[in-house]
Image: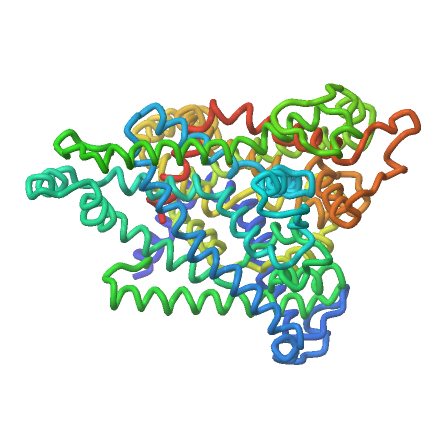
Length: 310
Length: 299
């Protein structure tokens, strides 16, 4: 018995010795991940207390769900919810379908070279920052910009439309800007799904007299459907993420009633005004709802569509 | 997949092809036009540019805007900070991701599962903006360059990417080196890194572009403006522009440069901020895409 334990210890020590170097390399990594990933998770607890900077979380007054309640019963809550849902629903419908249609159209282009050029250019905007994109959008939409100029030349409007200072247009601008920036990039994943289409299926279909539209409808779309479903589930989870950087850049004081979403509210209260607990509570609530939504949609899709993300 | 030969080309199909090609051409213009427009405005005389009507080519050509950028210390400093954070962030980020990827793909290492799990958890849960911000304040990272690269040193996503690549390298190679008495760090430096260059290039591009483009962390952590980068300077100019549409910032304009307008300066900064991306873009776009599809498979 004693001998056996001794043997076991000896084995473990030897094994550890052999891996000593790897463990040594792991130590700084573990320290890093604890500090930069796990300490902020612990920091979420400030959502439940009246946090005062510089004090330990446990010394602060515990208030339970007060900050969550305050947020929900806040008069501006409904406005935030409206903006958030409106913009994310626009992204989930128009913004979601656009890359699919784009990928299908690229796929139908006859010339290989042309196809390549279009595709390569299409994801250039993805790699520029929102600040740069915003700067370009300002130039396009300003009173002297090309959009107003074209509309005036077509006699659709008499004087320049102040697109960026009139809240009415904000949601449309936001959606179009997102599409402009992301369409090519999002299409990549659909294009790679399309490249997995079973050629035998196409041939069989052609034998039975299927045309091009039929091919798209009965072969290509069913092939990429699982991809679409997965991305849609993930999109539902992000329904409360209705943009953040975009609003800080494209929004201004006169359009605030249209761009103020949960994230910008959390940022404004939490960081700019220094109400750390309120900001954290809002952010935490948002991610919890997102999580729940992913699970619910995932279950729904598994049950009714036969595909799911996990 | 393009149209296979066995599908008949009908008249409607031909019509669709033409329509599709034309539509795609319009799309191409919509994507490229803003870039050309900004370039044209940035080379135009300021007072002339605010009248509008500049599209593809400057009307009154001038280099004043770029001269102004080169003279202003803030902008030069901003460019240096941008370059600095991109270089430091990319080098450290790539090396650390690769090291972590190697550690979690070492088949004989008992802790690999543990390391994998503590990182994968961070993919799903996070502290969010405010706790992270408070932590950085507490660690004294505000107003430093460190805050731009240290908190993003490792990431679970890049760990998975590198690990899946390193796993495909034959294990016998590492084993042979170990038998010959090479240390793990040496195996990493002399075997893993040279063997996974394509993967590392892909990650380097992602991290590099991210570093060059980021402005929000600068907005949070560069309180005294010492470490402002180009993007944040552009952001502040945009905010000013939206606050006062026809403002001429007298503090920013020296007496002899009355002709310069915020609009043209903004375009010039935009051009400076976007040029590196546009230049590297054609050379690295295959890496962009390979990373995207690799990540998609992993998910």
